[in-house]
Image 1 (cartoon, rainbow, N blue to C red):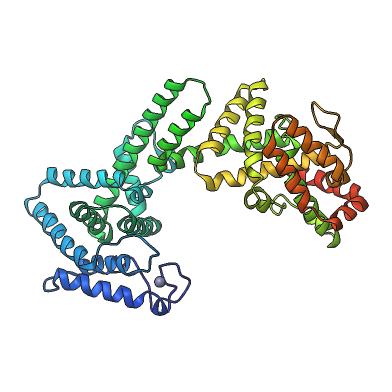
Image 2: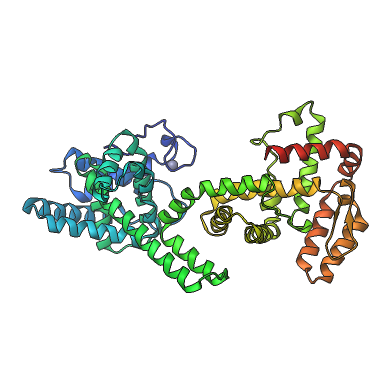
Length: 453
Ligand SMILES: [Zn+2]
């Protein structure tokens, strides 16, 4: 199969955004030519050409850094790989073929960038009943991936192989094994070898990860300490497919947790310093909306002001996230509802440990929720002090903010105090004036965001 269906005027597959002819075409052509020359083109088949061309792309596409083996090295090892495959197929040695598949599986585990090549087998399991074992499930998946919907998987796998050659460390023997796997993948008649090999590796990863997770849990029992999290993080880094499975399986729990928070069944009340930057950013966004006619009426759950900049670029995340997880943990412990408790515990596991992209969306939602609920709760007294924020304008009141910062310093929370002063320094005078004018409307707007959350 032709993997890179790239024409002169296509976008360059290196991701530069330029046209192929103006970007990597020359380098790809050069790499392909040098690989072909080393391989020797006398008795090459059409399938062999597809493999060489794919390799020419992987080798020739622009890369910032990394250490791609030279086209000559790849050509030489490709010849050796083909010799080995030919010998095995001539003597029809099943055992040697399985041994080769195992060698590829070892590589799939050892090389960091190859860990992305796995199949989300759990997504197929709905059709599996007690009588069908892994084998039948595998047949079904191979059929699926061999069809038109499998093309994405194949292209991503080729891409991971390219990344691995570029960034992982390889001996010649390893490269040879990888080139055998690449050949299986690119050529239609042998693709199933590749797919079965990946399926076996996926199943082995999931089983190994499960077993290790049980061991780690036994070792730490219920303690939630940093060492436990470190071990879990390392486990999930080694088995990204397990990470993916857990987070997909936890979707329902997270939804339940979020709606329990929104419905008030779980009380999360993070302290003011962990959301103060967000309050200020939220108010200034809402003020802008007051000016555009009826913009606030169109405020839906999808276009909520999500305040990413305040949370991440300006760093409030550092204060918000630990408070959020503490509050969730506390709320779970206090809840009478054991099902909800499990959901929250799973959500915490998800938020603290699993891969970031999906966490970000959940954290942003909870952040907005905490900001809005803080605003709607006014007046709010700061526990353990006589400081009280009565109206929105109080967040812009210098003496009051300074008293709050001093109170935090008194509690030896120096970084938090500094953060509060920082936020205040960034607040605008113009906003303060508008907030005084539109206090009721703003509170109503945040209330409506809460309702829609
Ligand atoms: Zn390019």
